Length: 294
Image 1 (cartoon, helix red, strand yellow):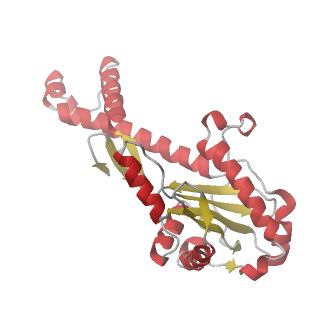
Image 2: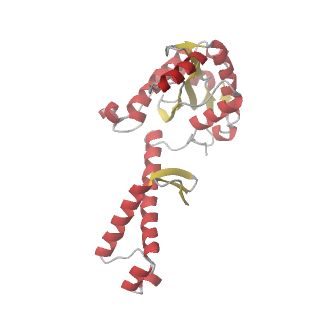
Image 3: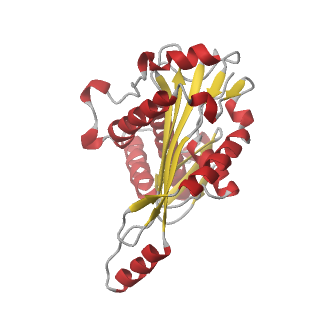
């Protein structure tokens, strides 16, 4: 299915996947494919149209163009899906086995209020509410997480706190050097999701008997009333300053070897973990593409 969203963007849905492509790129590609096919003696038209010779070539310009658009859009769609899969999944990994056990580690969360001067101030009350809401949001994803899921409580993490901290550090490295990439890419990684927490996850494996662990790290900030006033005042002068933001990482870690086999990130200026329903939406967005067990 192709859906024209605007003059510049086209949405594609195929086999349950949705991607967006730049329409001018598709149009340029379609023109090149169509012209190349004609020059090589091929046709993008069905035999019924092609049998009419040059008359068919002129009579069905829309069909000819549509065939080119569909061909190019499908090619771009395939490339986009493959890029997304290779970017979020470790080499050689695609899904969890049906018999695998997953442990959900308590999320590493911290919420802040952004003061007038832009300095983030930790809010323990907001963080406490967020922990409750995120836990509820994860509970609502039972079908996605699988049948054999163990949820650890905060008290269970007393002896495992260092593992959560390690994940935060490794996840930020994955985010910077792999998800953002560009000039920050590490040549030794060969554009692959090739990060590990090593033997540090062994105590978690021994404690739970799980095959995989889901780690979540989120930092959420909100503009205070003073910050909002400053934003409005400076906007009048043509100066823009940032408000709050939501940054999150989710990692699926193989507890047998410490490898991060799936990773996703969330970076936006919206979302609110302080409320139950928006928190569920954040978890849904962060777990998009999470490998199901089969």
